[in-house]
Length: 75
Image (cartoon, rainbow, N blue to C red):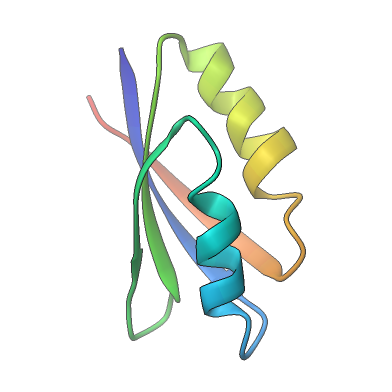
């Protein structure tokens, strides 16, 4: 099992919309809105590291309103 936390910066005012779309992604287990440098913190789980890379690139970073991400893989 591969687990990671992803911090996300969004465009201004679309945090809740991005949260709703993230919640529909099966690999996403938790989504939290936070204050500070980042707007959202996401917990993601996949069976393989390659699946995490795919989910991050194809499903999360491609969402409208996502400006940047920082991924921290749990060891």
